[in-house]
Amino acid sequence: MPTLAEKTRLHEYADPIQGWASDPELHTLFDLAKACTGKGVIVEIGSWKGKSTVALGLGSEAGKNIRVFAIDPHTGSPDHLAKRGGEAIWTFDEFKKNMETAGLTNTVEPIRDFSDKVAHAWNKPIELLYLDVNYHAYEPGKEDFLTWSKLVIDGGTIALHNTYPALRVVIKEGQPFHGWPGPQQILRRFVLGKRGWRNIRIVDTTTIMEKTKESRSGDTLQGFYMRGYGETLLLAQKLYQLLTRMPVPVKKFLKRIVISGAKH
Image (cartoon, rainbow, N blue to C red; front, side, top):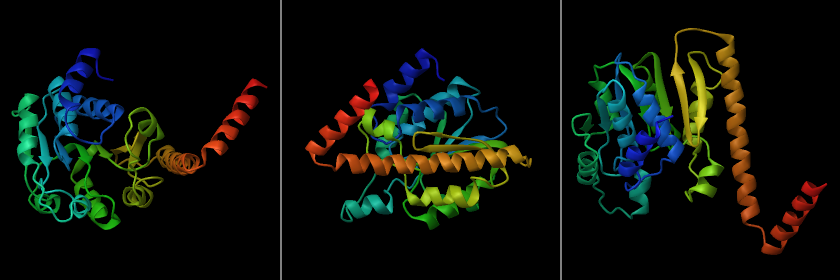
């Protein structure tokens, strides 16, 4: 975990930026970037206004000062554009301002383009890859995952955002549920219970995995366990939504039952 001083600095610059990364996710991205050894660079796909970029950049500066490449066309995702009724979106100027405010202009290198175009000419090994793009649909997310994961070094780390819903984030941080079928399908098909991955964990809505050439049965079993855990998170979301839609008298009745059961 970041030290108290590191957390204070991180939240000073990240909190004012619009975005959907929770506090534990920001801390985790900071730690992952700080732990990079220099065997490869750090790549973020989907930067928006730079909330998660700040965590990666400050984490890198607290570690080996590895270059962070932030890839985003800064014209909004298809889903966001649809919600805006086709209104033009431009986030690059705000992104640059946020990097300047955090003092990260020498650490973060923005690449204003679409990830598939950038991938064709990419020639740098990647030690940490953070994928946070339009994953509501399976196909575009799958192509990004398969293309960019091949560029990650053995022992490198991939963090995939918007995988499973996090009830804690909804209740404590007031954020909406984030967890979409697209990234869940990517994990089920290519990661969880499959060879080539180890040290899989879920931090709120982000799933983190380490790429490996080794083939160990324990890693595969852990993947199946995390798949089951993810399904439990989905069930918890459905139950929570069901409870919140219930009439107030029913909620009070159920609350009395729970309290009475606890006393006995």
